[in-house]
Length: 466
Image 1 (cartoon, one colour):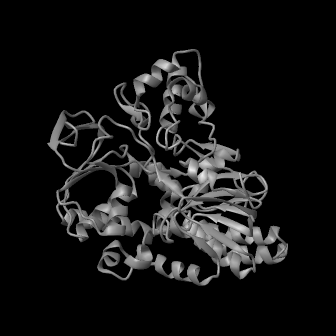
Image 2 (image 1 turned 45 degrees about the vertical axis):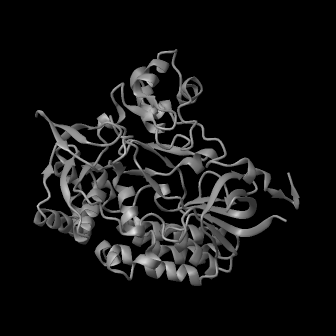
Image 3 (image 1 turned 180 degrees about the vertical axis):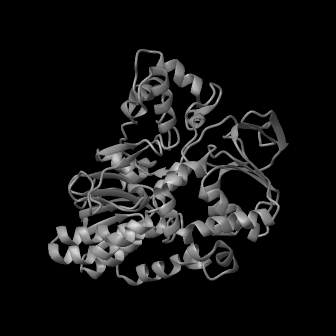
């Protein structure tokens, strides 16, 4: 028999946990499905076991704060199924998922997507070599298994996350050979229009300044205005090559390079559902359209957290609660007046939590070169296609991303275009001399995650295996 719940939440990060707690308090049945082995999401990964350890201490107060939310989530009475992948959602709402090799469909009155964000794909020559990772991946290794690289690392990129990770790594006894800062010049000048916001939220600015101070005290070398770089090696990373603005090209030995160029909302589920999206010029990515309660253009499908726009963990918690109030209102658990009263302090709180976002977007815009890789750079890792392959296909008339997919198989691999979608859209826009927002993105089709025939055969619909 098909299980039924009032609300199914995809993702057990800050937004998903916060929403589940409030939904249970409203008397709704809730099931949270999550790909990870424990609640916390990426920002609070493994927080239940790590927060009280020495690693939790070096990760900082912001990380340890997730322990209390995870405990409240566990005590809320919400159903929780870890290590579960959602691979299709159909109107109704029927959510198809797999866990432990078994597939199942859950029928929900409402669906809340709390799938968070992903690091922006930033292809460069050599990014597929062993020894090249993202900063986010390295931070996951630190959180889950306390892994600190034995050799000094090079960090390449911009934004707050590299600063935070390097500070955490130094506290853990790791060494940073150098930081290639790719932030476009003039960041503080671009931030000046937001000075009033900075003064009101200076506590958050102070955290970033403290990370910089830690790195300076540790002797971390910072190289500014890096324009381009590449990883070199025979079968593994051996050398990092970089060029600064107006300077000569330098080469340094490297065994580990960590790269980060910001984060973007995870949009694959909302794209597969054909929810409305808009293009963000500031961050060069798609953002789903949501109303004041986080409801998408599809009635009964809600979105909370960084998947609705990058704002951080605290804002994700608040958005999760607002979405829960909206769901409770729609299901008749709250009157319009009750919902408005409960939401008022949360909306004020959210406004403060999002106050610095415009400044950060202005300071750390994505570099133009991210979207214009050299012809020899692999842009689709799954199918091993280079930027040159895409440019040659783009010359066949005026194809869009879906035609490029048909011509080249770009976006047809296991990642379903998560790593190549934006790069290919920008390449097409440049070749066709039209706005990237007009070019668009891949049409996303199920299954959203790799699915075995055995899992599909295990699916039991209305008591009969199909």
